[in-house]
Image 1 (spheres, helix red, strand yellow):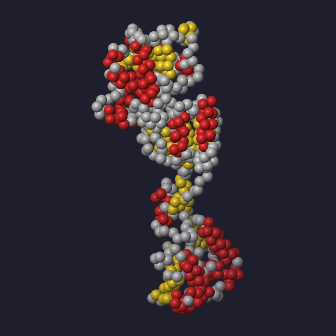
Image 2 (cartoon, rainbow, N blue to C red; image 1 turned 180 degrees about the horizontal axis):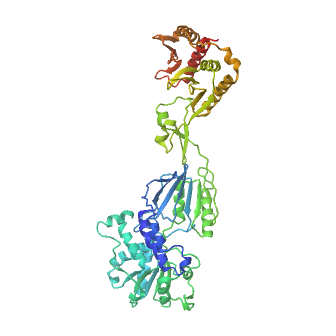
Image 3 (tube, one colour; image 1 turned 45 degrees about the horizontal axis):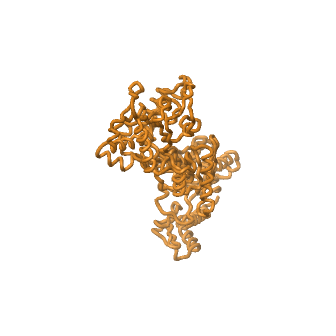
Length: 590
């Protein structure tokens, strides 16, 4: 939540605990719960982007009350704007709700006033001040039922300025009778910089929330109810509390007046008296005549139809979901919005007005893009080039990484499993070399810890031990398959005495490298042309095709491409395969 909201939050919820007339067992939360929740609140600045589990969100000024925010939420590329309560009209202290510069895919918007149009600000302020002036002029008491937060501060600013400009009213007191409003006033005095330009400029001269003609009324015991006065009391719909108590005391005097300045819900006293009944029922059940004047002047900080329509027109979201509204008003707003866009071929907006608890399901299909990162992104790839890497999905993002980069870009680590397998073998080790050489030409004699060993398929090591051979390899699907093949050959040689008797001398494994070099050069010239093949130092042959150069080491039969030619895998593979096949063909057979 925003910083101002956190400051107000504590007072609002604490007030609920204190004024609730229900048993402790039925309470939603206690004062202790409230205190513990404060440490769990994370504050956010307007326009500051936060990300949690891949979900991004940021907020805009909503213009409803101090700290009110609209939230933009982005999930897997789909953007949703939730307005909450908002107002597009700047008032005495709050700026108007912002219009985001990002188009949302879904707009969840309030529909409190449906298709109603608000009175212009200047007109309603003038009517409000004139009504209050008329009440006190005739010697009456003016009651303004409001909620502790929001419109109360707006109306106090208006009244304080009006009293300042009318010296004849200085003897008539104005009270705001709400301990919660007084606590919230301290927050308003602190967060002046979160308000509109007018207030921010005025703060350089004096704090507008330090009122000159308004005082706080702690309780009815401190109220000297003699002569005309103006009292702003909560709650706003007069269901109980001080505003209800004052209304019942003053309603029988025609000099008095009540001004309903905000939104009223059906079934409340505030809504009931707007129909000007002849009598009202008190909280004790007594019937009293209603003689005081009743005026309705809306200062509600909710959008009207004009503001809502302009807001939607500016954003043009494909889906609009209406919330926070009375059923009939919401239906009228939906119908009006549909009519507004039914003949517009360029803008297609689907309007939803779900009932409470009713789910709205929307389907979105977007392209999934994988970003190549790390060493794989060092060089610009060519069209059609294949790359090999690991696809990593983090939240709603995809990355392709080289295994060696995993630890740099993720919390994952690259690990290997080395397999070791011992196989009984009592035959000659050179016989094993011979049989494996018949299987594949990719057999190399090596020595490991002063023990004879063979390197097969470049990845399988066969070590001679007394009475056995030991296979070692790094586990992966390809190496596991190679190891199974080598194991089969070893078991076949061990179990077939005829194979062992057929070999009585050490098998020559050497290829005449001079012959191999000459034959290799001739074969490459036949494959690519004489001009494409050249020799370096007699141990390296160079093949150049279409500006791409591959160098083959005759000793190791490995092929490397020169800088600028690394991407041409087809040339490297072709030359490497030819070199290995020629070597196998020249290997002695016994």
